[in-house]
Amino acid sequence: MNGLGARRIGLLGGTFNPVHIGHLRAALEVAEFMALDELRLIPSARPPHRDTPQATAEQRLAMVELAVSGETRLTVDDRELLRDKPSYTVDTLESVRAELAADDQLFLLLGWDAFCGLPSWHRWQELLQHCHLLVLQRPDADSEAPEALRDLLAARSVSDPLSLQGAGGQISFIWQTPLAISATQIRHLLATGRSARYLLPDAVLAYIQAHDLYRAPNAENAAHVRWRPLHEANESFMSKQNMPSEELVKIAVAALEEIKATDITVIDVKDKTSITDFMVIASGSSSRQVKSLVENVLEKVKEQGVRPIGSEGLDSGEWALLDLGDIVVHVMLPTARQFYDLERLWQGAEQSRAQHSAE
Image (cartoon, rainbow, N blue to C red; front, side, top):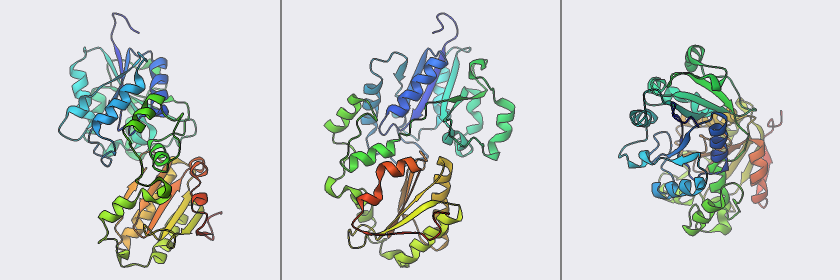
């Protein structure tokens, strides 16, 4: 705490759908290390880079409030939920800065993946006019920044986050405890009737259970039912997309092999469910590769005139899903793949390994 001096305020935004231990541990570690007076968790209402969250804004806010209850260094800021427009970070920074003294320090916390995506953000060049950027990086992260950010890093980066000076304008990196937890993972566990205990605070889990959030309509069929509403809504579009599903599998597998996916497995589920024909599962060695693999599949199928139904998990990079109607592509880090063990869930279906997937 800084007493009568300039205040030090941290901001951590996100959908928090739901808030989990990974969010909270990162926030607390930064608050302690940086000796912040306050670290605010800011749930976003309509994040422009993501689909509409499954839980309502009010429910997500309630879960964050429960999660930080009793921890005086962490607070909740609901300003983005009060906006009738997308949650642009620069607008939030301007709003917070207007409430602070001129010499108060403001720190915006970003994960490495979010930082690498800054050039796609609204008015991203103005962020440093209002704050310092603290980039949370795990020890096993790929540390090569995209070319669009290299000049900015060269001009604004500071090696020691404790030496950041002034109200804003600089960038520093801070290591965080590597906790392989994601909201996508938690939602999948809950949708498949499995326990999410110890991945999020007990109070948050109790709230989820009391409000029946993230549950699949039929937990017994949860290995595939999570896509049912989306597919039923697009039933007319999904009439095989004018391409045999076997051909679509070949395109997806070739796209995965092209940038070195490993352990590519194809599961034929035509006789097991009416939801899709094939599951294609592959592993990536890093969060960046997981996203690159899915993006490459997406590019290749679009070249063939196939429009995707939807995607999930590209923000976390631990497990990403691409729904192509007749096939569903999963790309995961090895730890996530071992944890979910989709091959075991579909053990009664015919499974085959791509010929070159182990190279």
